[in-house]
Image (cartoon, rainbow, N blue to C red; front, side):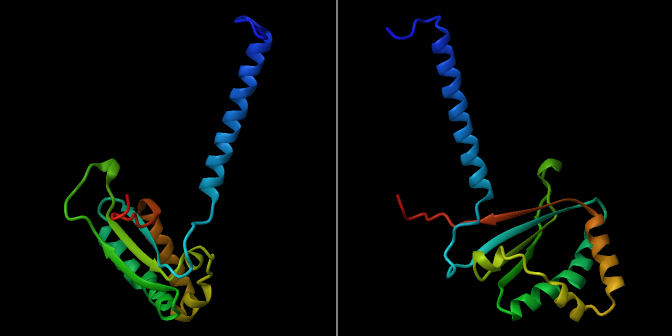
Length: 161
């Protein structure tokens, strides 16, 4: 028998094997998290954007969103980058840890466009000549947030086995 139960070589081999497996696992997880979304360029790509607003500021947030951000999204629709934009709010309250106040769902033309780091500065300058007011109001819109997160979605086929 090459290894006895108390063998230093056995312990060293087990430790080395565990270390290699852990490294492979964490490398796989890291690559999966950093990977560009896999999607056909012909398929629309949907992202939900969730906003949790500080208590008492939901109306102000909605006003600022409609005034300053929605026109930019509509302009991107005109450019063909975005196919559809919707805004939803929950009908009932939830627990505080699961609370969100607004969900904006944006359907992009495809995954490449959704992830191309499009710079909307030219659009905002065109739409909002008073950049000082625009920047101040956008800063305020994010100041009154408790949390914000983005959730790219994928369709799950129900007919496949």
